[in-house]
Length: 252
Image (cartoon, rainbow, N blue to C red):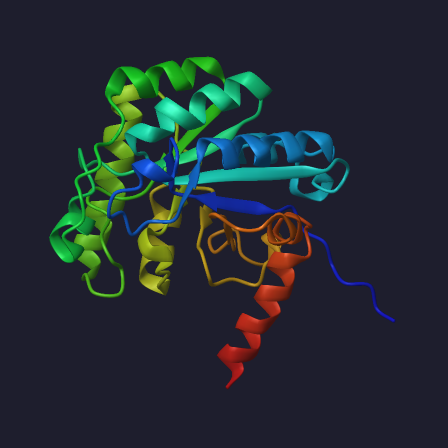
């Protein structure tokens, strides 16, 4: 029997809530402080080492199976990333990659769904995270645009200006990009490559094998899931399994 492939898991988070009394009318996936701390403790107990995409580049793709690596990613850059995520990363000395939009709040959700405003992190908070060495930042467009509906000129401006703004403001070089809504198009992928990103992550598309396409790396969404489901999703096989299902759908 052929052994199923294992890959470095790439997890995706969005919002972090103090507890279930502070959820509001958010439509984004979220975990509570208690749940996220349990995630980190579990990863530590199981021997996982959290890395960033810059770390992955240094390690070398060919060496990514030599340790039990895992990548934690967080989309949008909400204020709760600083208030809840960051203290726990420091407590357990674990790393994460946060993808920043240039908007000051979740305008895309407020305008489309009428949800509460959620502010993004302040400049000084982002700087503190960078200085800690525990957080790497990536691009996520200016206004969280949908590549399924914008033209090429708009897509290029959204990707390039967001990258340029973040790099100039924080004096860093961005390594990876996350497609808003997980909407990957060949046009967007081409622009992401051209502006200098070396990795890009999706959500529900991609084969699950990192080296199949560095610009459509599949992630596994993590929310208030059960213990069993969390353990399954960090196994290294889950993204490959989901990727195979996705490929079969593409063939229909």
